[in-house]
Length: 330
Image 1 (cartoon, rainbow, N blue to C red):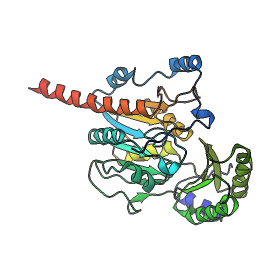
Image 2: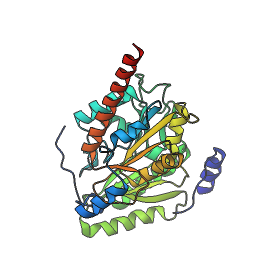
Image 3: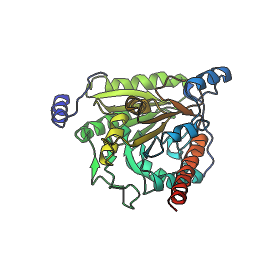
């Protein structure tokens, strides 16, 4: 199976790596969500300043350029919550995102399935990429057109050949850990997520070993770990950074010198997109974190409430620029 998949994916131009408002209370069960040491966080902010406090400096670079916005979902547009099925974004966040998407091409790149993110966000003027960028709805010429983004017609899915094997793994995981107290298996189409936030601490080690045993003899898949979640994904050289480049290309911005990308995310998988933007030096990678952490991002926001504030300022900034240009023309 691995040989078959490797041959066909390589023909497609990709390489396989063989290395293995309901009120919801945010949870702090994992190290990345613990309340920070104030002194350490203040020191970290010197290297990764607040994007809110540095807003004017950031947008100074955007004048005369086409701004393109990229966002993660969980932990960025919505809080991290106990039940992943209840990671709802607030009405205020949806309104701010809608306004930003009216003014700038806006995409959400999430580890969730594309349809699940669309169900949470409920906006048609946003482009969606699910499964960490392995399932991308090819955007129309302008993402503000009202089109249906459900279904797979027109979707870019570089890991499509992996689907039968992914379903096999999903069934095997259900058999091995389906009865584990608190464990939740989420089918994200090209990524299987095993959430263990609600698993008793004494059982988490055993759960991880069971998940590892399912993947270890399948070199065409790899196991990664996020915030209280294990994820099984195809071992393709494709990540959120590649998804960002793909979206820029399909939007017609890949060879433009007058484009400024803003990418906001909180997860380890967002680091690949941060690396792309930092390498091009044609935008600003912004990490969402309330604790010091290793990151390639240049700026930071503490939590989704600061993301909301940033998006509101971004929409307001663009309107003020438009008004200024109109006055200048008159």
